[in-house]
Every structure is written in structure tokens, then in C-alpha cells.
Length: 422
Ligand code: BGC
Image (cartoon, rainbow, N blue to C red):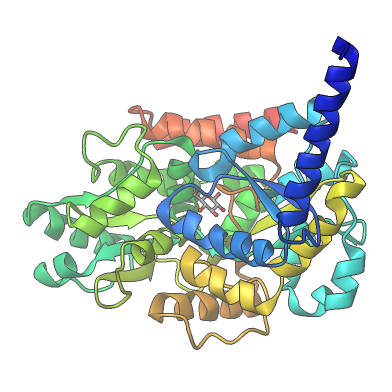
């Protein structure tokens, strides 16, 4: 045998081997999908697994591209690099304005065939459609609705200190004081910009109400941004800074949730993905933990909705992509996912009976807020203003939290930073 014929023989036998392996695999009905996301905590991973399993059951191979980092900043950076090198994923977890940015770039696929067939226009709440559709085309499928203005409390500690649900920020501080006196950290906090921003969403509503939040964070009205009301929001943040332990810096959000779960800290101010961590730890709402809205914000919901945005991809991925879009908005997935994730479903026609008291409250609060015009996009999670503005706000809020900057200086800096993005 010559070298060349040996090579050919080897190649032929390798191909035969491949064919055999392929024949012995279960039918791959709809190819494969590669999904970029930042759902790496226990609750997040469990929730995403519902989709992975559903799709694998349909014969679609799931390639997981998890990029750790709560809030998703790291994942968004990786995406940019991938798009720049012409290597988009099939789908990516995406928030609010970022979806519109990629749609404007012409990077996203048109999902109207699936959306029309499954009637998305009728069942997805209108405030979400504004982000998931672009020029009349569906480009993303929402997986659920979260909101940021929540407080999560260890129930045993709450009972021990004789706590009651605070209706005002002053009452919240009084509750925090009780935790302090009982020898526990009043507020579990993770010192990362997006977490400080998450807390600040609630502070702005609490200080000024939904109209003020809208003026300042959605309309970016200069008078509102520099007002005494905005100063009062920073004053709240300053008070909250006094309630955290010395090791807060850089801590991941789920580790802060774990401090509440373990009873090392009394409370955490965080979006309802924290509920997913309680669920993953086997904890029950009303029994092991208590949830209430950031004090003084009941009636308003600062929401963020995780959607899967779908990229323009080659033929090999298109069938899997269409199936994934349909799966994400299927009623059974919407419920199973939200039960584990802590979110409310992104469809207005699915039953809420399997949700616990906090889940039911989330669903009812969203409905009520939507009816009264106080379902407002979260600044912290990209649903109030474009990314550049969000980044400017994050710099000031984090700068404030981690220094002794005065509230008066903070509002000046805030307005100036936002001006630079106009
Ligand atoms: C996402 C949530 C996620 C949280 C923490 C938010 O931006 O919307 O789905 O659980 O970040 O990672």
C-alpha cells in the first residue's frame, strides 16, 4: 500500500465509523442550538434546565454558553466580540434596550412565522412587546417578568425580632435596627455596580413615586434628575450603605441571598431571581422567608424581562431556533421556568395556582401596576433607558455607594453624566 492509499483507506474507515455512530444516535429532528446566558446560580441554572431538557426531548442538541456574572455585563461583552468576528450564537438571554440595539444593527432574526402561528401578540403583555419587537417583527421571545423593587427576609429572624412589614423607609430602618440589636447583619449586599443599581431602582420610586421615577429615569428630565426628590433617593442609599457588613465588596448576589437563607443577615434588597435561590435551597415562601416590596413602592413594579433574542444564523440552526422560540413562549414552559426562576410568566393567560404567595403577589402586582400605569422599566436592568445612560447612572450610583459623596454632589454628577450620553 502506498502512503496515499493508506490515507484513503483510513479516511474511508473513519467515515464508515462516523456513519455508524450517526445511525446509532437518536434522530436529531431539529439540529442544534447554541445559547449564551448568565444563568449560573443554583436557581437560575435549574430554571434554564427546563428549556434544555424540553429541547433535548425534541431531538435538539443544546450547546450551553454560560458566561458568569450577575446582571449580564460580562455576557454582553462576550457577545460583542462574537458578533464582531462573525460568530453569533443561535440565541442569547437579553434585556430591554439591548435587544433593540442588536435589532438596529440588523443582527436579529425575524420570528414572525412562529409568533403569528402561536398568537404572541395576544398573550404577551404590551409593555414587553415594546422590547421584543422591532419595526413590527418579533426578534426575541420573553421567558418571564422579573422586578427589582423587592425585599427578601429570613422569616425565623423576622419573627424573632417581632418584625412587621414596613410601609415606609423609616419603618424599614426601624426593622433593620432590630436585626442589628439581635446581632445579625441587617442587610446582605453584594458590592457590584449592577446590584447597587438594583437597590437604587427601589429608592427612586420610594422617594418620589412612580411619576417621579418615570420623569427621572425614563424621560431623563433634567429638573427631576437634579431635584430634592432625587437627593432623597440618594439619602436612602446612604442609609442602606450603613446597614451592610464590611465584606460586601464584590460579593455575588446569590452569596448575599445565601446569607439571608442561612440567617447571617436579616434581609436582601434584590430582584425576584433571589426567590429562585430560596427555591433551590428548598425554602418556602411564608414559612422560611418573607417577601415585600421595597418600602414605599407598593403599587409600582420596576420590571425587567429576560428574553431570548435570536440571531441571523445559518440553515443548520434555523429549525432549532424556531423550535426554541416556540418552546420559550409555550404555556407549560412559562410556568415551570418561572416557578424555579422566581419570575412571573411573560404571558397573561397562564394559571397562577401553582405559584407560592410571593409568586402570586408578583403576578398580581404586575397586573395592578400595568392597569394603573406604574409598570415601569428597571433602570438597573436595561428597561428604562439605553445602555449608555444605564452605564452613566451605574457609575454615579456605585461611586456614591462606595465613597462619602454627598447626595447634592451625586445629583449634579448624575445629570452631567446623563447629559454626556445625549
Ligand atoms: C436577569 C436575571 C438574573 C439576574 C442575576 C438579571 O439581569 O434579568 O434573570 O437572574 O440578572 O444574574
